[in-house]
Structures are given as structure tokens and as C-alpha cells.
Length: 279
Image (cartoon, one colour):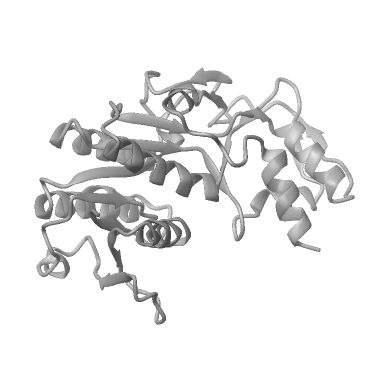
């Protein structure tokens, strides 16, 4: 049994906490506003990670910790509070803990539909993405055993932006293709739990894993398929956007070679389930 801290208990963090607690681990969730009703198997701590005073009473004997945070807003100030001040406060408090940090494929600045893997250059122009990248570097520099997991676009229950967009006959770039990458929320939890299991099994782990499903696809194809499933008009083709960012294809070979099997290997698997749940 390990003593585990989960920083940021939103949908992914809370589901991971429940899974690890069910496996017999001693789990603490850190959240600014813990839920009013919590399972007895999970201990919650109310704290703002940007405030050292809030962390003064946090235990220091966690063997493992997950950093799964979301800034309040998409502003530089909010990103600095989490990925700079907040992470530095946690690492100062828990320097000997093994960390797994949830990052984002936004750290890749490529825009021409290139294939990306863990060894691809990660040099984004966007300031918020740069702050995430710098946080990755500080975490892995502190301890080579710390791990960064870069998730692509997360979808699932409560994350149904593309479904809503598909119902509005959106304008989508068709030619040349504009690629998108996704991972289902349950696979996010699955990947994090899987990596912890591999550590306990004494497997050799890399410092970085790219977590995205098997099916990077042009947005035109995704939206056309969703519109068909929803019985809505298809999207309309819009002119080429030469400045479009985030156009890349994510390669998950390293994660799958380690043994992870995706519950939702394609966006079609996950979105069919979401559409069915809508009735």
C-alpha cells in the first residue's frame, strides 16, 4: 500500500482517487474546495497550492503524488499561479515524493499536421503552453524518476464541446486537413493508474509519455461523422486558415509499447457512447 497525494481533484483526479483507494492505497486529495460529501476511503485537504501557508500542515511522507490541475482562467496570471508558483510550492514541500504530472500536447508548437512523439521538439509560442512546458522541465530536473504525461484533447461525460459544435453546422477547414487528437476521460484515469502500476512492478519508465488515442483525424472527418450520428446537417467548408495552430498528429507508440490498452481507441468508440447516453 502506498501513500498517495492527488493534487487537483476534478473529474479525473476524483475518479483516480476512488480507483486507487479501492486498490487499497492511502489516498489524500488536495483541492481548494473539497466536495461536501466524500468517501470515507479518501482524505481531503482544503488548500490553495499558490499559498505556502495553505500547505504548511500538509503531510510530507507521501510516496507518490499526481499533479492534475486546471487554471481558473486561460490567462497568464492563472497559469503562473498553478504551473509556476503552485508547483514550486509543492515541490519545495515534497521534494522526495515521486511525481506524475498531467501536462498537455499544447506544449508542441508544430502546426503543419506533423506526427509528434515524446522526442519531438516542444517549443510552443503561446505563453500559457510555455508555462506548462517550463513546469515539466522543473519537475523532471528535480528527480529523473518523475514522469510527465501529455494528454491530448480530453472528452467524455461533461466534456461534450464537439457534440454541441457538430449540432450547429460549423464552418470547418476541409483541405488541407486540419488534424485533431483526443483521449477519453476514462483513458486519462486509466493511463495514470497504469503508470503507477508499472512503477510498483519495477518496470523501466520514461520521463515522458504522450497519451492520445489511436485515431488522430482531420476535424472535417470528425465533425462530418458526428453530424451524421446526430442526424444534423453536415459542416460547411471554410477557407484555409494559414494561422491555424495545434495542427498535429500524436503518436502513442511509447505508451502502448509499455502495455497500455485504450478503452476508447477511436473517437468513434467514445462519442457513440456519449451520443447513446443522450437518449
